[in-house]
Length: 311
Image (cartoon, rainbow, N blue to C red):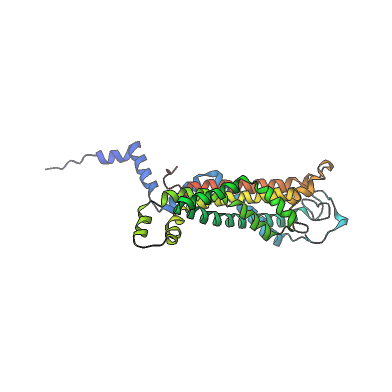
């Protein structure tokens, strides 16, 4: 007797609906890291931001090794040279500093302050928010009122006051910006902690005699890593802008040290003289780096979005 096989299964696999289902199944396979990486790479703006950030890291930290310039001693015989002058692709400023070399050095300062202040703000805000949300009650109320009071005070105002009292330096600006920027991360992590503290694994740890500190460090903080990392990128961008604000108002680092905001301040007085090369390059660097960090933050949100669909 001849056995007849029905092609139903094969037909289902070859139909458009069956092929789409198989593709979705294959796409959903793999480790969580690979799925998150796929979501990140599908965000073209995030990939573009990563490329821009990589370019500026190479430009600012490796560029001075390839294009060394003297950014300490002034050269009054070579002031205000326009771009394209022999030996000065972007010209010179009012005291003879090479603008291209100064962009690199200023970028180092801006990025270092931004990264360090962003990390400091994220660490403080994470611990504050995790403890506040986990403990709850009166402790939570007091800690959040402190946060609300801090948010009500403009960060730029505090930076200007401290810059007037103390001599601005890179370590001082890192500490000050970090101490005025941790408030938003604290509120975000607190919201996550309130929902996490009632999860089964946290309750099981407490039932087995685990301490509150262990619950916070072992379960609360690790399970908010997505929120923490995404917000950290925004904190870095905000810190770079704060440095530019303060320096633009003339209260930043003093020469020969500089940052992109200070370069803008130095070039503003020559606006009507047509010295665009003292303003445009530094302003463009600030805009591109801040946009890059924000785009990367948006892509990291997709990366950690475990409930989101692969696109």
